[in-house]
Image (cartoon, rainbow over the protein chains, first blue to last red):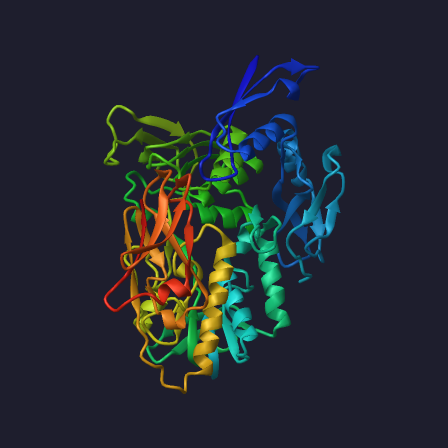
Length: 127
Length: 419
């Protein structure tokens, strides 16, 4: 039996939720989960998603050319797997966009093979 | 020039106030904004998590700002950009300055204060040690990284676990810097739980509670900072020092409402919040001068800033529309705080001016498990709500019913406390 403890983020309680689990095919086996420490059902759901498929939205900036800003803010849509966060962040360093760009414009699709897109969260006007 | 309503500050509060004032029938409005674009601090808050309450989706700061900028444009709100309000007289004459117009004045019938807040600087922290380059407030570093595209350092220690510090710990990490520790003098973090998990735990950044900076070394550039544990009285404990080599120290040690202009008008400030004392209409002691957003009290969620500011905008519009009438004698009741509740906004309530429901927001002074939030009208308990936890880092709110407020008798007070 393996063990993992995490802080639930659903409310300010921040319950320390512990998941005891067994490894099957190199991955935590959901059937084996014994979840303790949560004080409400949301804690259990959170623990299951963190154990099976944790995702995060990566936000950052890319270089901007020919516009009114030095950098343009971007995010991943939908969120990427948690273990891809640093890889995607590194990828952003290689990107340069040219004005004009509007909020919602897709800058790269399927970034680093995640099937997520890099989407502009700011406007870049020519100037 | 003359304006019905002048709004100082074009951040989330100023924009929402302007839109609401227009919707409530006042057209002659101007926002005075010192930056070259509207949106305020949201423009550098490129992380997500904004707008969950208002738009039911997770937006980044610039996206949230853009929605309000668009609304203001649709409603033809006039915005003076790159314009400083440098003084306001008690008779509501605003002296402004801009490159294009030089110095000019605006005579306003009503003013909405929406200047936001500033970060507590090193000078206000009494941090010992040298004064080398490499010490920034977290928000300054945020501007360098997210607006200028420049990384202010490579090996970082952060003092204070406020949300901006936590957000910057993640941001600097994603940009390739090594964040060695976040030190927090209190035994609990002032930041939101989700930020501690997603900004620190996700990247294995240690959060050192009951810990502060006792020395900064480096003559030209920061070379190291010395951390030490503190006792219950927050005094450093000798022998617990730990030297951490780094080139950058970020400070995330609290936000202070920016009220120099408010004071010039003669607006009374609360010593607890640092913001104006306001009634249920978010009106200060100066009739026709309203306040909303972080200039009033520091918020965690921009959604509540927008909501509060819209309320101020509505009341400013009502003030302008009826300013010819003599305002009748209105009974006013003080909101008393006790047992864990540090302050409330509003601080006084006139039942005659209240809508059916009035939102009252507050913060607690410590971490409380299983408290009950209680509201009394005089000695009558009208609201009792069980909470699993209350913490200083999370603003609380209660909704007052007009029917309850109408039961108040002269000499009574409204009380908000934890039991």
